[in-house]
Length: 84
Image 1 (cartoon, one colour):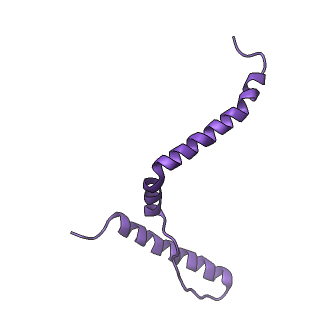
Image 2 (cartoon, one colour; image 1 turned 90 degrees about the vertical axis):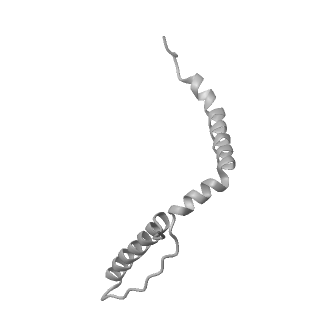
Image 3 (tube, one colour; image 1 turned 180 degrees about the vertical axis):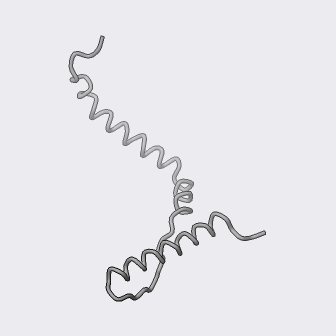
């Protein structure tokens, strides 16, 4: 019907963890540059903004909003170039 106890599964846990790590490592090695290139298409880093405000909290909020807007524009330009 079923296992009487979970001891069988507990014995397989270390093997299963090693097998999972090996499979992930193999997949990463096989997909290497292609996966990195695909990920970098969607990553926008080092967006610099300079915002001043009455206090630090408001300046941070304004800066984050401006940085998100600039990052989105950069991402959209990558995905949909304006060349005709």
